[in-house]
Amino acid sequence: MAESQQEPARPAPEGPRGPGWVLIGFRGSGKTTVGRALAERLGVPFVDTDEQIVRRAGRSIREIFADSGESAFRELERAMIAELNPSPAKIIAVGGGAIEDRRNVARLRKLGRIIWLDAPAAVLTARIAADPETETTRPSLTGLSPADEVATVLLRRRPLYAQACDLRVDATSDTPAVIVEVILKAFPPASA
Ligand code: S3P
Image 1 (cartoon, rainbow, N blue to C red):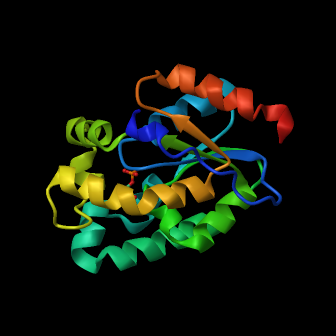
Image 2: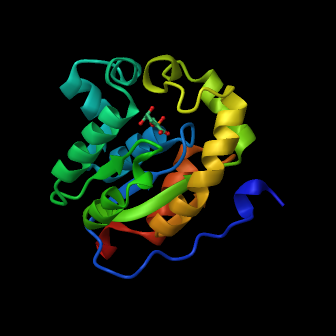
């Protein structure tokens, strides 16, 4: 069985959800690509919190990590998520580590239904290596080799993604267009 199928996501605790769609998942899971496609399909705004952080800081994520450390980046990330407004309904993609802070998860639930784009470690490692964005947006989190970092950090985060999400989508091989339809079948705009 594929690694991404070993752990079916348990439903996140009941509670009010905002009207939007929030994409979570590891680096390389396709949050930005799927988020843009979903926003285009629905004609709603798309917000990528990493892009907002970079714009506000006037520095790349790699520079923020290098100059001020990961904890400074996490503070910027927390502040950015806290500022987002549920209305109007929108698509929000957050960095892969955002769910490590429970406050972020609670706030994301108020913005929308949370969708976890899941894929096996080997797939994520290959996509991260192939993505030109990696150089500026994905500084090392551990000092380990890329493959070891994905394996180690994903092991820690998988239960957090599973707990945070309302829907887990296998993003291993389907195109963004197919993933968009899977998401909309589960959470059509009218269900907001
Ligand atoms: C991070 C993922 C990155 C970015 C930062 C930290 C992480 O976002 O927020 O480099 O901790 O996994 P993506 O998941 O969009 O690559």
